[in-house]
Each structure stands twice: as structure tokens, then as C-alpha cells.
Image (tube, rainbow, N blue to C red; front, side, top):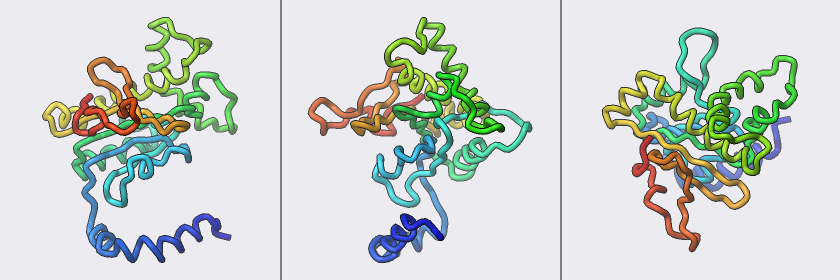
Length: 227
């Protein structure tokens, strides 16, 4: 049996959203032209379309365990994330790439705690080993797993590492240096719904919402922060 949650959701889509946006879907059938590539985690609690309140055709999304961008490499196997980056940058000509991490990330925790493999193949373990350079950067500062807040800092550091890895792709670096592409880091706090944006100059993450809970900082605007 097809999952009820999907059947009911599609029934709602047919009865409500599709009739209201019929012209939009007809236009989308001709092609897509999103300006933003968002690389997020496949965690079911962190849905980019919900967080940023966007509809079909507005953002091109890649989701994987722990929102990791691997460094550029040729050969060696299949490259799902890299191929999607290539398509977004060279095919769709996106203007922004956002790496969106999140709080209580299971993939980051699995790396930090050296969790036991979920399966004999240990696909997750091999994948999250890409977090190692971020972990080393914290160790160099004297940070360690047993210190309070370490996992959050590792989530931040992993986002920064993914931004660095993006620049190992020649076609990304070329467009960044030409001012045609901008890279951004962001972090979503699930419990409070807080979005933090990485300051490219300091590497620090700051909330996009002021203390009154309503006013967005300038850094919240995607076009205002560059890697």
C-alpha cells in the first residue's frame, strides 16, 4: 500500500493548491530558473521549503546526511552531490549557494561520538568522515568533544568546511571570483526555529532576528553575505 500520508497529501494538493497555481505549474513545465542552490541535510525535521516559505521552482535543493559538500575529485565512484552542484552552477547558472546546517544533526553526532555502524557497509560512517577537517580545525583551537556546546560548534565548522570544499570545484571558484556567484553558510535551530547566518569575515554565526523577534538583520538577505 502506498503511504497514507502521501496519498492524503496529494489529495489535498489536487483539491487546493493545484487549482490555485495552475498557471504557475504550466510555466514550470517548460523549465526552471531558480537563483538559489540550497545544500541541506536530509533530516526530516529540516525542510528548506518550509523554513524559507518558498514554492516550486524557487530554490534548487540538494539534501544529504549532514549537509556535506565533498571536495572535488575525479573518478572514484558516483558523485550525487557533486553532479547536482555542477548542474545548478553550470546548467542553471544559480547566483547563490547556501549550505544549511542544523542543530542536533545526527550525522555530525555520529562522527563526533564515533558511533557504531548502522550496517555492515557503513555508508554513513564513510560519508561523515568528510567532517574530519572541520573537527581538526576545532582541535587546533583547543576545543574537544567533552566541552559544552561542542556539537554545535562542530556543526558550524562543518558548514565552513563545506564552503571551502565548494571552492575546490573550478567552475564554482571561477564564478565566485567573477562576482557571479555568492556562497553562504546558515544554521537552523529546530527547537526555536532560529536561523543563524555565517559572517564571511569573522566566521561567526549570528541570528537574523533581532531581540524583538520580528526585525531581520541585513545579513538575513541572501544577497548581502558572501563567502
